[in-house]
Amino acid sequence: MPADGTDGWRPERPERAQASDALFRSVTSEAIGAGLMSFLIVAAGLLGERFAIDNIAIASLATALTGAASFAVLARVLAPAAVSYFNPGVALAFILSGRIDFVTGLCCAAAQIAAAFLGVMIAHIVTNTGLVQVATQIQSGEGVWAGEFLGTALFVFALLSVSAQSPDRLPLTGAFCLLAAALATPSTSFANPALTLARTLTDSFTAIRLNDAVTIAGIQLLAALAAFALYRWMKAGA
Image 1 (cartoon, rainbow, N blue to C red):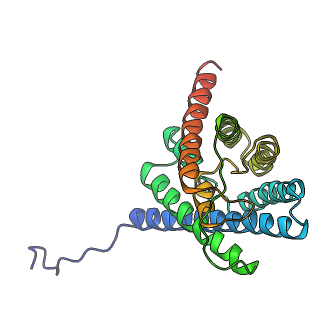
Image 2 (cartoon, rainbow, N blue to C red; image 1 turned 90 degrees about the horizontal axis):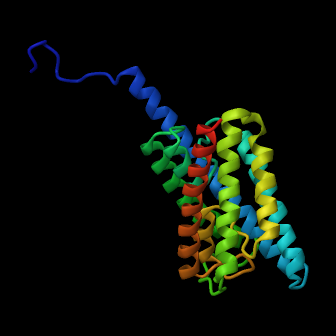
């Protein structure tokens, strides 16, 4: 028995309890947001392709609009607990900028990826497409890589800037960035490594084969680094 006469048990300090609660809320919010975005985007692609009788233009538009709308709604209703907006690339940029700490960012990114995979499976169930498929659709080449880099850099840079100046405008700003990138680039990955990797579990309109998904996710993370570097440089000169 310790010298102070207690049995060695100490109550958790309030600040530690508050930190744990905040982390749990953030991780839960990020998982909900990433999972729902993944579900909505993949389901929209499946249904758009099915009902449009393989009309790629309509399926692409349906997917782009769904992705942008889902981000706008989820970013609004899950804030402020959602600290990196359902995106590992944003989590990386926010860690580097000091908006969130390393542990929170890492836990949120892991939750985002896991939830995005689950979202794809739920999309398959809802659309009667089975549960899990192996993606065979090729998403590769200089055009795809350049589009992913530019789209992700635009999105992350916009979120870094708006979150510091006018957080209330972030949902719509991010949504318009995603819509523009989805309509202007060959691959509708929505600047999101979690969603990109999760789409290896579907062989539908939104599918990306595993090798290409890993490459694209790496490019998206590099784009997030570039966006952070540009933001820091412009902020230093302001």
